[in-house]
Length: 473
Picture 1 (cartoon, rainbow, N blue to C red):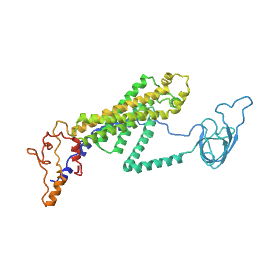
Picture 2: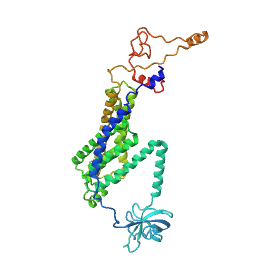
Picture 3: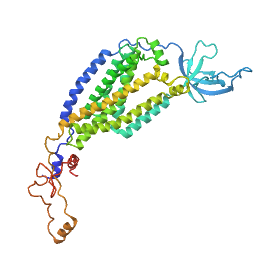
Picture 4: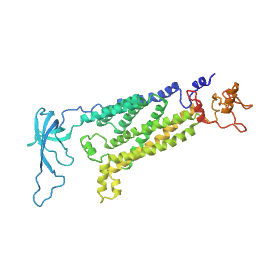
């Protein structure tokens, strides 16, 4: 039998057969999917109010035709201009394109005040219609940016597809599933008065089960990542509940949460904080668990002699490096989102730093980042242990027997001897086999010992090289 034929039929250690992987995947996937589906049915929003006519100001769309700027009136003599007072006054002419008064041309004041919109001719703007206003019934509040966002979304999708191809298409489909679960289940269920933490856990499980298999395929690697993510999410939820209760966090720390608590009194604000921690952790957890599961799989393939302990140790070292970079990423993400708040606190030099850090707003972010990081750290040993245990059982355990023999390709004769044979018309000399030892590839249980020495220890990496699908070393 030729060496190439033998190589093509050898199993690839460290990777289970497709039938075994399918059985084990279904054994985990089916119960988890059924439990998630039943929970979604029980928590599905039923009394969410249907959207109706908006109370208060009405939004109108228009296009700026002209801007007539004039200097604002100077303050009376001896008085200073108040902080935040407008310095540029005048009028803006707008063609209304959608909403009340569409097709008409109206005049409104130049936007003024902190954060006011700066407009120029040709800009598409959003206005408020103030029916009871005695002077100007229209007021510019923002720019229209739907066209720009659609173009950016199209560029984003094309970039993902150009680089990821079919994998990129599955990633975009997974992103669509994520938004669908968020907008159709999680947000309406919380508004309907369901427990935000329970809704977040069920919604995160639905996102994970769908997106991970859709993006990474139905494989043993994905199944182990799913199991590790589920376990880490549970730990994160429990830790977040303990930490927020111990720190006496109410979930009402800024104007947005305060307004929500007033207008939506049935929403549990502390539970909403916990839900945010769980959902925010999911995005990084699946990255860590998939990476660890794939790492163990590749290590088991490259080193078929590795058992559980060696696989776990090697993959954990990789996981530590990954976690170190992920922690820095999380901190920088929170710092970037909270940069205005950090500047405000830095400018308030009169307040002690300890008082700033223990305030409701800062303490909430500290708890969020700390609990999320602990959840990430637990994901590494859990996922690595599951993957290593499965790979060791299906691979070659140390002490369970030698690495299966692989037919070795005979080494070529030295150049001088080969040249002599070719010149003299004789045959090339065959490689010598030490007496008492099996010939290479003849089914022996150990490699051929070196001349004058003991048999070398089997190198798992060389065993992997010998098992290259092409039969080449």
